[in-house]
Length: 65
Image 1 (cartoon, helix red, strand yellow):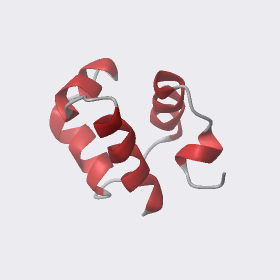
Image 2 (cartoon, rainbow, N blue to C red):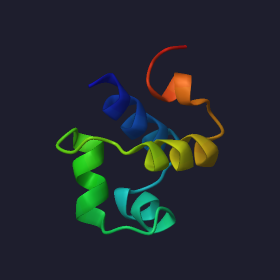
Image 3 (cartoon, one colour):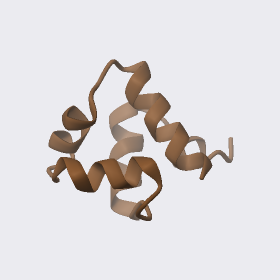
């Protein structure tokens, strides 16, 4: 569950909306919202894109750092 909170915190720290991030990932807002709320498992390709976008490591994203 930690990864989902970290994803939300990164988005909020960058003053982005869920729609902004969903558009960057080229997906529907409802799909991204489910990832961020923990209703759906975050796929590896999404985690990689988010880590690259926010300039953080995957370890940081999943709370291993």
